[in-house]
Length: 171
Image (cartoon, rainbow, N blue to C red; front, side):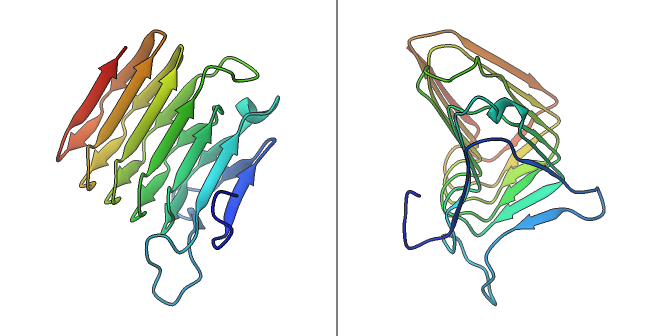
């Protein structure tokens, strides 16, 4: 992984994790008092099957980045990524994904992270959709979206964006 001193869950294939509205899946530290950076987080990497990955009703806490996409496009539904050292959701797209990506986040929250709720750095076209998602009380911008060398395809529907707003750069 990126940091050999921390546990990191790296997905190079398909991961489908589905909790329930009452019983969320918890991905966090096993420390008595979990703290940001206890573990590295969940990272999806580009493979032929990453687009079939999804996570629903899951909580990601006490990580470096709660959830990270490296040229991968899993679907997130009712996911909470909170109390992480840097970003709740970090998306890096260099335009070289195996299959065209389309990232969808429905419901859930990306809040109280040390960095951004959502941090995106994308080269080329990347459809990105947020529907009914709360992004609030993060240390930096709520959403940092930086697209270059392609079209920004962003859909925001019923997004709650509180404290520090958003930064959007298109080049």
